Length: 119
Length: 107
Image (cartoon, rainbow over all chains, first blue to last red):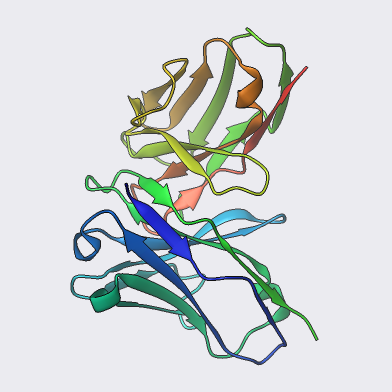
């Protein structure tokens, strides 16, 4: 059974750093793209970027490039999303999702990680 | 960026009704369109990909159609468990984008 399990909720202050994780199981983690998606009430679902854990090839949405870093450790089947300096506007639910073999969908999703940034 | 416009943004229908949701793309995306269902507090779930292919385990009352710039998601006979928000996504161009969502309420 394909599963993506994300790390727990984070509460941070503006300017702090954070790294959230997404561990895959039940499939070949190195052979499927993992995407990160932000969800807010105001803007809905937004694709942030993808990583291919096999070679760490990474693609970013222009809206998020330079503000977040996507990485992966294939030895432990885990992808990461990190910020070095959080803003209040980063408060959101973040999902990881596996991009299917034909690249035509995100077929399995993590349960989500809520990040709250507040002073 | 490719914009996706969903309509309606909200609909209320009765159990057994046929429901149709539309997703329009700002430029042609061939059939690179997926539909997701999301219930409150849960992650999105894939329903349909490649515009018309039903994902494994999804009930056959869900169907998708369209290509180019206009797509539809149809629920042939609405069930109580279909109360959710439905969202389209294009995977033809970077950045990948999502529609604004359609909330479906059961009367």
